[in-house]
Length: 333
Ligand code: SF4
Image 1 (cartoon, rainbow, N blue to C red):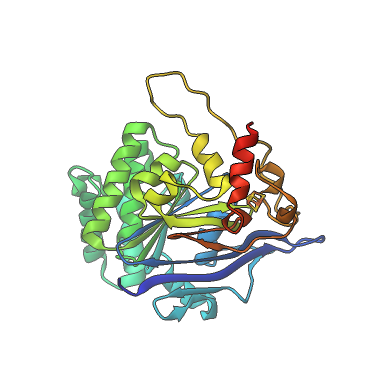
Image 2: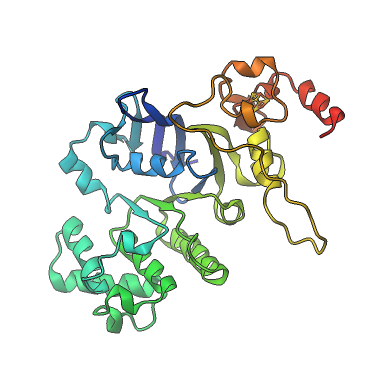
């Protein structure tokens, strides 16, 4: 296996308010190899998007990526770079795409000028070469007759085309890492499938690593090699996508999977996870999932570490006391 292109270790992003700090991301670690995709799943508010923004060091005050965090791109620790050095990383070595393309696209600039500007800024090439690169990228993401669309404004593109243009802009400088934050959530199902296929084929051609954030487990199952499940600012389970989805270890992952609608031909009841995501202002003591967990017992008042579970990790005491799972199953609902 090749050396990781991105290594995140003990990432902590806290928002310092007058009361206790709000621990939005609380000790997250993972690594990512070139040409692979890591999915990050979890309910809203679990810290997925803040993890991506923290990697780019785009956290505004009162938020802060805590100094003990390490974010290594190759052998450089991004935590040690100045803001000017980080500007040279963003959009160049690490790019980000969002659910809403207009977060990235400026409505008063043409699509061609926006992509070309990113290329000129980071690659120092002339205007003609940058526009040529913009047309090449639009072609690569499947915009027909790309030269003729360079002078279009974002409102002249459909939603799916805007998403493609945003991907073209993000990949124009050939980044090592693409952070994709719910990039298909706002699209209808057919366009969503097209964008997922496009990302997979671009990854085959260009070799970038992708961090793909979504609350939609079905989408992550299609695109990710490995998956991280986040809950309350922490990783609760991590492993190969096929294994996590077929044999989940953590009760939260089991709950997420039970809440996905399936096409079975029969009417099936969906089981929502009881309760709601707690506030980052005060995560529950001990295991943060315990107020919602059907297996919780006294030991869960202590916070479990990430425990090795076969070929995965799970933040759950059931890994040390597996007989507890059977006790609960025998007791019934
Ligand atoms: Fe449930 Fe306890 Fe495991 Fe937490 S540690 S997920 S409360 S069984």
